[in-house]
Length: 234
Image (cartoon, rainbow, N blue to C red):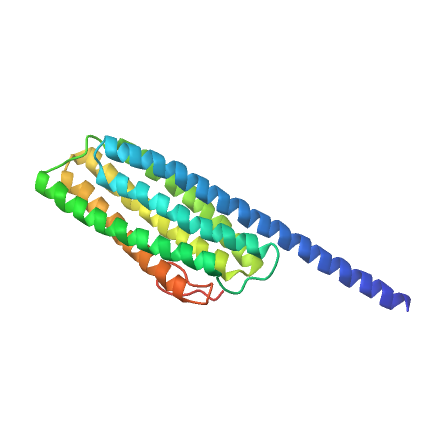
């Protein structure tokens, strides 16, 4: 009798401990989602302002991409808030709409960057400087790496395909930052205008891939689709 009571108490304590741990992990995921949104807003504002000021299309496109990521981030934030109160196995209407808007915005960005690149070639437009692009991309690489690693760790601990997928999408932003860094650094060293155009087309390619993935996610019932053209089932 006493043994059964002790066993029941131990079981209840273990369940309570697991629930507390899960609650802390979800809170961490929520904080990471808020940091992602806030960072992208700041990064977007700085990149768009200096992209227009210095006439660097790569930086401008990078900044617009950051704002599109905010829409996607709001969808992820909404999903994590739902996780606080119940198990989440699929996306709701709000999250699907956010993904559709994100996908459409990425496609518009892709088209805009291609047209902008063509106009810059025709008009022989060159940036005044790409120094801000070097600074912004360097900060972004460090920030995105931290967010990517943290989200992946939390996602695996929660066994959450959605958070793991979000970590993989952050990886895309991480790679995109290297595109901006390379084009900005090379232009600053050589002053060859085509380098900034190449950088903007690199941003356009990533924007197209992100747009395609957003629409795939909106159509799918699975939470595991990521931004690497395949799905994770970890």
